[in-house]
Image 1 (cartoon, helix red, strand yellow):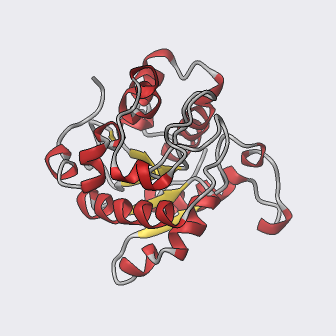
Image 2: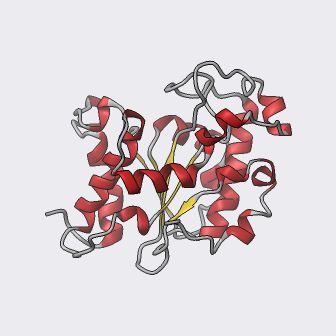
Length: 230
């Protein structure tokens, strides 16, 4: 087990996590031991293409029993733990490979051999898996509201210095739900970038003045670390 359980007592008080404890955020064992405290937000989990039991948002948020064969798909911690052990093998792990590479770039000459995931926290922003395998969630009002509620709780528990949205879709819905207003009088830095598993991570975009998704990520986090990429 490569993750920390130091915040689990507090996570267990979050109502949504009482229904789905597999969604507890990944917290690296070195989180909080080095500044800054970084919370990375992906977009959503997804089940295999034959799953439809989660398509009704009201039922999902009331709590359903997930068939055993699908349970592994939302075990955030075990997904990352396995990826760290097998070096992110598999097409679906591209998000983690790209994030790890960018974080290593930021850490520069820190001489830290272990993956940066040991020093950050990670969770998916949306609290219901996407309707289609490998696709974005079609966001309902309930998704927008519950995701913001859970995110508020997690931020209060983890006390991050920076919260990085690695999904423009998640950023837009967090803003619409008033998440950023909750923390406007704090020193928490919020940032956003395109999803690391899309082509935009390495593709210059006119709407961002020729920057790639990775550039947006680095622009937010590098000043927080106080280092320059090498």
